[in-house]
Every structure is written in C-alpha cells, then in structure tokens.
Length: 511
Image (cartoon, rainbow, N blue to C red; front, side, top):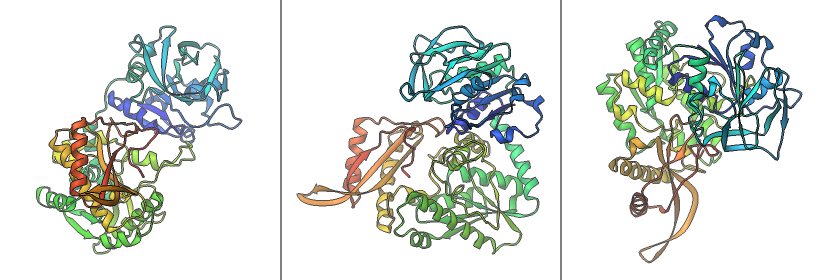
C-alpha cells in the first residue's frame, strides 16, 4: 500500500483517487496518526500532501524524522516538498510578490525516474503557493523549474526522496498522472492489485460483522450514494434492513414517487415513505444562512429517523451514503488543519449526540467508484449514473429564505432544464447540472406588461471526481431554447443566467 500524509490540502483525497485509479491501494493519515505504531513492511511508498501551513513559521506541521530512515520512497507535493527541504536542511522563503497560483509552465533541467514521459514541448502544471525552496538540502538536485521558481521538482535519488512544487493530482496539471505512475511503478516498484469491484465482498462482510443480528435503518433518498449503500447493506443483512425515504418537500419534481416504486417493486426492499415536508418547511422558515439550513436539515433527519426507529425492535444503526468528498469538505481536522468549506447535512450537520450508531460503507469512496459498485450490484442505470444531488436538496439551491412558492418555481425550472439536457443527449457529457433560484427580482416585459419576477441560475459542470470542475459549454442554440422555454412556462421567473465559474475558486453548489 501507499501511505498518504494529509497536511490539510483540499485536494488530498485526489492523491488517493489517482493512486487507486492506477490499481494500488492507498490510505490517508494525519501527521498525528503517523506517530502511532504501524507495520511499515506493508508500506511501499509515502506521499506528503499539500496544505495551508508554512514551514517559514516557528510552529509548523511536522513528521517524525525517523520516517526518512525507513528507506521507503517519499514524494512531497507542494507543502510536502517544502517540508522535506526544511527537515533535510534546505532553506525556504516566503514571498508575497513572487507567488504562483494557477497555471504555470515547467521546464526540464535534468532527467529523473519521477519525470519519465512527463515533459512535452510546453508542460503546464497547477501551482498554489507563496513559499519556495531557495537552497537545496545536501545530496538533492533540481530536476525542473518554472519561470519564477528554480526548484519546482527536486530529488535525492540515493534516498529515493522526491518533491514537486505543483499539484499533479488535479486535472489542471497536464499529464500529472504520469508523476504518480513513475513514483509507484518505477520508484516504489509496487504491483497493481486493487480494484473497486473487489471491495464489494469486503464491504458486505464488514457490515455483517458490525451489525450482527441488529436492525439497520437506512436513509434512502433515491440518489446514487444512498441507493448503493442500501443495496450493499441489503446483501449483508437482508430482512434486518429498514429503508426510510423522508420526503422533505425539497426534492425534484415527482422524484420520490418514481424512486419509491423502483426500490419497492424492482429491488423488493423494505421501504417506508415518510412525508415530513410540512415540518421541514416550518423549521426552515426565514432561515437564509446556508450553514444554518444544513444544520437544521441534518438534525431534523436524525430526529425523524430516531423517532421511526422506535417503531421497530433492535434498531441500533443508521446507514448513510456518505462519500469521501462529503467528509473532506465538512472536516476541520486539528491533525491536518484542513479548512472547512461547508457542512454536509449527513456529516457536519449531524448532532453530537445520537441514539443510533452510524454505518457509512461508502465513506472511503469517490462518486465514480460508487457508480462502479452500483453497477456490480445491479443498480438501474438511470439511478446509478444520475447527477449528484445534495442531501439538503433544493433547500440550498433556493438562495435566501425558503417558501413553498419558491420550491414549486424551482422544481418546474429544474424539471424543464434537466429534461432538455436529456433530450439533447447531453446528460452523460455533464458531471452535474442543476437550476437555482436567486433571491433577486428584476423587471421584465411580457405581453407589453411589466413583470417583476425572480432570476433563475443554471449550472452545468464537467469533472472527474467533483473535487475540481469546469463549466460545460452548451451550444448557443440550446441556451436560447432553454431560456425561452423556462421564461414562457414557469410563472415567477423572467430572467435566466448561466454560471461560468470553475471549481476552484467556486464550489459546484452555490451554498
């Protein structure tokens, strides 16, 4: 396996993702966890992630120096490179004037196993730093540089320690996967022996071992994540699984009716449908802050599940379809100093005290890996490859306060938008598409009369994993058609705008 030390980068999980894509198992630990005893014989390589900390300050995140004496190949990324240089006796300087953020072009200086087949005539990489190594440690040499940084790739070939100033894990870095290929197979000399499909039986056995003869309530929304979690748990414990679909009133148009029928009839799951739309709307009344919305929705979910669990005997577990990206965006770890972006209703939104124990079989997987698991479990294609949908639903796509009128408007807009994407054979080319309702009304003219109605925002992005994304370029003909159709068919909207932001600096959802 490959061990990844997380120093707080928002894209650390992408390192794990890239390594898994290459068929090698990887595990992420914090610097604090690295100090604990472990079997280093199984670890064939160590990766130090990036992070918001700086080695130029007195107190910075460190690793035990003994790690360098284990004779295990090490790759440092961004902060990881600076940490290696610092601990090995090099010098690092912080510069507000010569910062490198975003795209930069890298130039080869010397040959290295790490960069074999990596360079082309104009190799672009993704930078995110204002610190730079200005003096190499002893026995290190420079492999590549950018215009502003002479030490962009460094290595100590004898000790098999390497560092890159850029982020090879993000798609913005051209040919970044080659860096990982070279590190894994040429330097660490590991074999491809990990496949997400083979994880299915392991997950089923783990669920059996954890649950035993107790009952599990599963929060089933009908999305990819909760559906795969439900089918996995069903394989493990059969009749002891109780699925509950809570209609919050914040779902897409007619979605609950459709998914309820599929799970009840096609998969023969024990599904209970709870209409809690009135309760959710009442609790969210006049709430505009997105974090408060998420917290309210998370607490309400748990309350409802705990209430329902009392109707059954021996229910001790609550199952959720939580994924890796959910956890990283909700985490504010003292061990890695990760900056929290937002709370997910099923992670950061959960109350501290719960009567039910959580089971999250997918918490170590990315969305595309979950789709592979879903396919192997026989999950229908239209659910398995459905675009991601947030747990809080339309509650975080109605910016500002939530009302029944706004929910109905947004449901109609979203229904038109998604159906047109499907009709035009664009759905599978897009990672995620959705409509949002902005808290702004503007003047319009319809039938020679003045209107004063809402602006709806449309968003569609392309992505490999949801951690980074770019907006989808619709043909002009499609944009004209969809704008016209929404304004003409949805009373309450007189203006349509399209979001052309990438992630980063934006997130995919607005809230």
